[in-house]
Image (cartoon, rainbow, N blue to C red; front, top):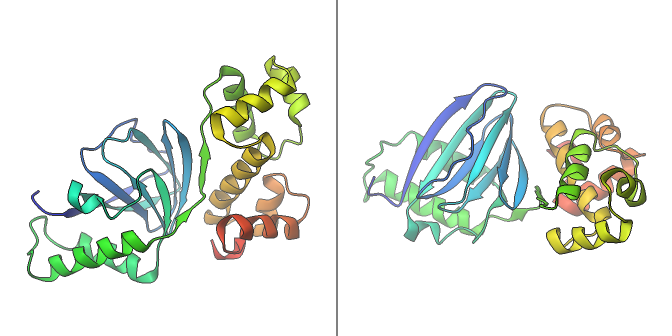
Length: 241
């Protein structure tokens, strides 16, 4: 449609997946409930309800649904997409941002440029430009040894194994694994693992798991240590997810 943005609403069942695809327009993906796992070539993202994911035009991605998800999306023309970040990012959403997305979904596809639809679009672009990016993404790895390690930790984020233990399991020296993590993700192994644990914890919290149980499920020995790490990473407490 010849509009700066077009809204789309669809509900998904638990376990549904879109498969890897891309759109000619930039996309803002928002969930009213449930959790979305979104994989790109460079990172994997967990998007709890009440957060949004910005996906630039032509960016390949795949969405997997966790729980029943009410997805609301905006597709933005190239000129309007300039309001968003240059890369894929999870965005914080204010109450105003949320209501604007819902209101846009009620507009016809060919909304009145000089009427309510035009006003909503202008406010949405302003909110997109103001939105704070959140670190809900985990950089992907490419080396086969790192991929085996990463998949094992995604299956069991609470695993206490250190880099030396993983080195023996995947067939590389600790020094090699450390160098590969830095080179491929820009993070140390410890920082990457913490990123993974906190991101996985956010999905558990969004699904209704109490903070203390979520902390234990991803490998934190105490709820207080988990809470401090969560606040440092996401700027909010686990109980507010």
